Image (cartoon, rainbow, N blue to C red; front, side, top):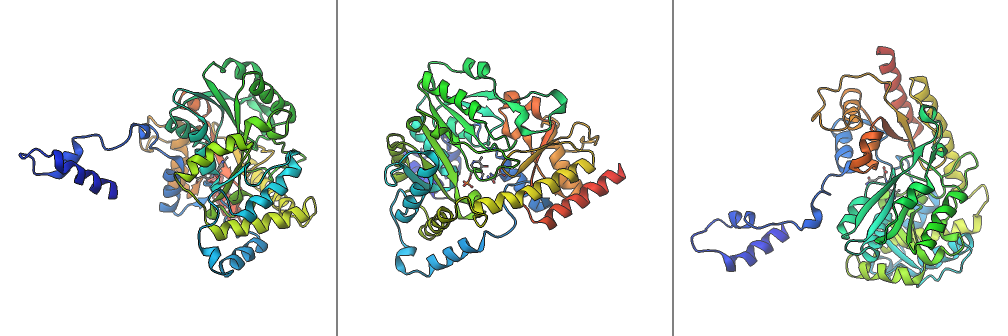
Length: 445
Ligand code: PMP
Ligand code: GLN
């Protein structure tokens, strides 16, 4: 309302005396900025609402439906009862104990001395770290290469920064017998062919949402070599870094030779400590890159919730001490999720759906082309098959998932609209409820 009132107030000056209706005056001039054109649809807004409207069993949006571990809940409680400073602003670019503990923790992993004050920016979730990276580093007309399938917000964020998104898909190498996310590969030739003099950055996401692909060192090295050869930045979204299975190993591209200087690595406490609602995230990289992101941050969000940052700081302190030990949450969470991954996979197989086994993350993609349902009733027929299928599944069967073409550019979505994504970071009882729905349905078919 504020902007509409202000606009109306400023327009009074220009109001022709014959026009009395201020509403008509507002409508006579463009209200919205052009950068919002074409980025108004959002899969999370749409499907989270639909799942709620139909009270569906929700294996759609990626959030745990269980509580974060007790130690981090205790840390938050302690923070909010810890005196006045915990309720007031802290340092704009990150609460000092948090940046200190992040630097200490990740220096050991990246093999590089991370400066807590220069090389880290704490943000409102990984979303704001991504937004600040694109705003700070992508200029009008710059091209940004995005590997498909990709977490959907990368594209609107590039566009809103004035850049142009250029896509390169991971391709399934086994034809119709693709069984693992590791079968989806990035061709060096195809990636190279997308690089132009305007290319500024390559965006990767490992472990990948939605596929669960965990990039191998050789694959990261190939991307790194191209970044170095063509003087490109790399924005590496690693929010699922602790969630890998069956011996897959998460490698930070920033740890490869020559990459620290040109990589922004993005993380999320929401994923790390199963507390997505806290919205604490971070960007890490050379101070030369991060300083530009700080400029965006200080002129927009400025600062993130103090008590949540304090709690996350304590979480990393604990994990530093327990690193590699069985008590570490970074060991326990993937162990718990490994069991849930198996549970969901066998449920899907038992009803004839072949999952693509994720090597990481907490999502599982499955091919629905063998499922015969009449989707003619489902809203507009110009929507892609997976969108219509997911709507049908929510409305008719009470089970929410996410259409995979949402993770593709409009140009390539059609090729991949035979897949849907299930989330398995859910209570076993939620997974059981989903299984009941699928079994009942398969028995009716
Ligand atoms: N990147 C990826 C790949 C994601 O799946 C998500 C969703 N949580 C985000 C970034 C955003 O994370 P956050 O909730 O910390 O903003
Ligand atoms: N990252 C989460 C997912 O992929 C949720 C994103 C959102 O709700 N905006 O499901």
